[in-house]
Length: 287
Length: 191
Picture 1 (tube, rainbow over the protein chains, first blue to last red):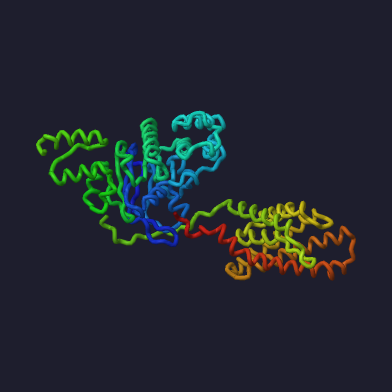
Picture 2: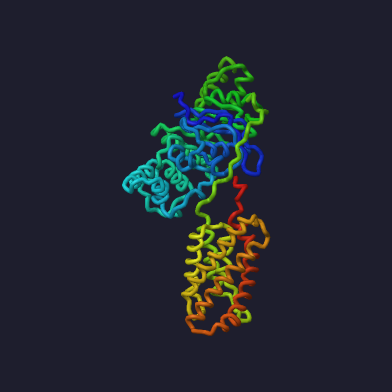
C-alpha cells in the first residue's frame, strides 16, 4: 500500500497570461487510496487535477517547473491520450464531456479511439453500464437519461478504458444531496471492486467522510495539509481559516478534543459520533 | 515548503495546437457562404462572391498547406455549383481551386515576409483570390461560349475587378469577428 500513484515534485504552474497558480507542490497520492482534495475556492484544486492527467501543462500551455509522475512515470513528453489509458479524469462540467447520441456510443467513443476491437468494446460497454447501474441502456438517447444518469454514464465512459487511477473534479456540484450521496456510494463500490486509486475534489466533504482514506488540503495554490485523513484533518484544524473545509462532524470532534483535552474515536458516521458523545458526555466522566 | 520563496526555473510551453479546428471553421464558413451566395441580391449587375470571401478568411486564419487549400477550393467550388446562375456552373470548381491556391500562396508569402499582423492582409487575400478565381471562371466562359477576346478583357475583367474589390472589403470586415469567434480561447485557455 505504500506505492505512489501520483507524485508531484517541486511542481509550479501558471496558465498562459496568468499568475502562478500552483506553488511548489510536493505531494504523494498513495496507490489504492481514496484521496480527497479539499480547500477554499481558488486554491488550485482543479488545476491540480488537470496536472494529474497531464493536460496541464501539455494541453493548456503555460509556465511550469518541477515534475509530475503518474504510476511511476513522468508525464513529461507523454501525450494526453497515452496518459488517459492509465488515469481517468472526470471534470465538473459533465455535460460538456458527453459527445455522442446514445449511451453505448458515448462509452465506445474513447475505446474505439484507442483502437479496441469491436467485440471488446461491446463487452466493456455492457460491463461498465452494469457497474454504474445503467444496465442495458446502450441504445438510450442521451436526452432520455436524467442528469444524474448522464453523470453516471460519463463515469462509465471513463471507467471503460480501465484506468488505474480515477480523478474526479467536483463530480456532484450539479446534484442534490441525495444524488451526491448515491454517486459517491457507487464510486466507493467501484473503488473497492476494482482496487483503484480514486482522487476526488470536493468542497463539501461531508459526503465523503465515510469513504475517504487520505486528504490533501490546498490553500492559495499551496499544499496546506496532506496524508492519512485523520492526520491531515488535525493539521487542517490547526489553521483556523481552513477549518470549515473539514467535515462538520470532524469540526465538532476536533473542537471537543481541543476544548476538553480528550481523545475521541475517528468518527465516520453520525451514529458513531452520537454513540461516543452519549457515552462520554451524558452521565459520563465529563457530563 | 521551506523553498517557498525560491523562484524555480520555469519552462514555457505553448498551448497545444488544435489539429482539426480548421475543418470546423472551413465547413461552417462555406455553409454560411452558400446561404449568402443564394440569397444575396444583385446590385447594379454585381454580386459579391461570398464563398470566395469565406474561404479567404479560413485560409487567412489557418494558413493551410497547398494541398489542403486545393481541397478547400474544390469543396468551395462544389458548394456554389447548385446555386450558380451562370452558363457553366462546373467552371466554379476549377476557378475556386485557383482562387483558394492563390489565397494560400499569398498568406504564406505574407507570413514569410513578416506581414502576419499587417492590417490589410485579409483585403489583399480576398481581392486577389477573387480576381484570380473570377479571371479563370470568365476565361472558361469565354472559351465555352466562344466569345471574342476583347469581350473578356473589356467587359468581363472589369466586373471581376469590381467584385474583387467588394470581396476584399467583405473579407477585411469579417476577418476580425470570425477570428474572435473561433480563436477566442487562444492564449488564455483556462477555466
